[in-house]
Length: 123
Image (cartoon, rainbow, N blue to C red):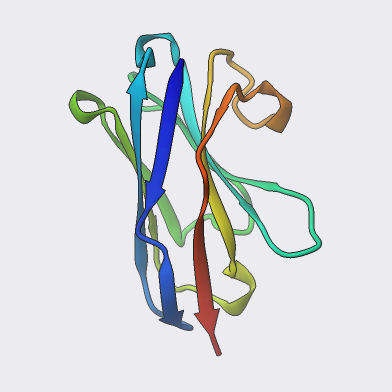
């Protein structure tokens, strides 16, 4: 019903920046909010940030507040994650996700997931 494709990952030195993009297609009219999650090897997938398509509401994990910014381009059905002041602990596969529901911080509430994009931060 909805397809999500992430891009923009790569290798960056600590203190640097990256911008991730997530392009949505299909029945995107049904999506209430978009979120970003990340998963490091051997660890649980964790919430990073989320945003409603309209209304401007955003949510951030404590670990990224002040460094990451989620934004939207509703006309292009695209969501972005601007990552600044990157740390080695930010290294993970980053996933874009969409939810039909309103509990945007809850992982199990998400209905659609992208394939992931690798972000590696070197010391």
